[in-house]
Length: 487
Picture 1 (spheres, rainbow, N blue to C red):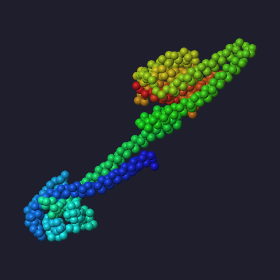
Picture 2: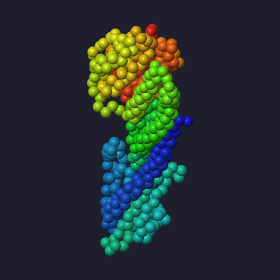
Picture 3: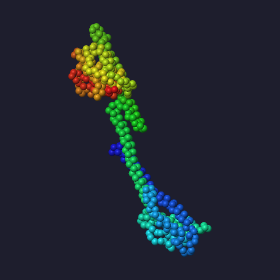
Picture 4: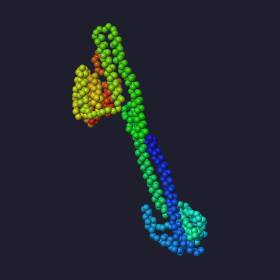
């Protein structure tokens, strides 16, 4: 199972469990809360009615009832009143209070009406909890189910004492109200809670998907960066927030330290190998110069020493230049430049060396509107190395052809020599440090081979500019082409 799916399932499971328990508590608390509020209202009602019934009960003869009293008449008028009230969207069209009064022995002397039919007048209610506790001076209340198996059929009874002017309890007034009368309000509240729970789960799912998507996206960027580092590509660490951003920066710093160490080891090995040949040649020539030699041989060995020293100097200079380029992460002050103008400056400086080699530098295509954003000094360095390489591989009497143009792909500079080209397998390795192919030489001369640092410098300059370099065998020679973004 993938990381994103695991995170989403875990997030949704935790949210779902939490929502389930929260909703369960809310739903379970709705009915008890409604009963508590209802009981509170019944207490107030019972006490008000007890005061209203006190005079009639005090005047009632022993063994009599209140069925014909003014209090009873008022309650009958209450029960007969029409009502049509809209309470927060729910209609109330019935008056649901049942009121009964008992004397000080618990005998019912008034009953406004039993919903099950009949009247309880004359019955002994002294054993009912509401009457019994109230006659003892305590708070009396009870809940009785009309149908034993149905909790919603409960009827709540709340009693209040009826007292004489001297403060003696002479009876009990009980107000009863069925819970089913408030059941629509309870069901509506439960529906709203459940609907809110569904919305909560849905919103949690959306948030979970968003958070998981962001986290997976961030982790994938880190993974992609790590894979790029593994294959040796140079990329800046991804910009992420929080701990993931710190992890990306730490990975980038670790990459840089490992690259620097590996780069140093490889450079020392390669440089040692490249310097060995000219140093051996210098040592051999110096040893021979210690003997008596003809003047012509002495001059030849001296020239050889000078050539090997020049070769070492060029190697060291290019190595230092390449090292500085590899340490840079971006251009310091890029400017908008005309690629033709940059190339013209390099061609002017390279003409002397080209004439010494018997090579002609010529333009095939020049487009002045090919502009790029970059560092003029670095671009000149790259073009100079391309020209040096092309001049070295072109035979005497050959030509190096330059072209500059712009199209939808970008701004192009192409340098083509008249040399022998390279093997197809070597094309993809051109630009690697210390990889080079033999240069053309006279039959009497040993084959010459460069260091490969020139094209490596070109590749590094292109990387800093966000460009690229490509090579292709053409007729005749090899074509090296750089592509930059148009400014």
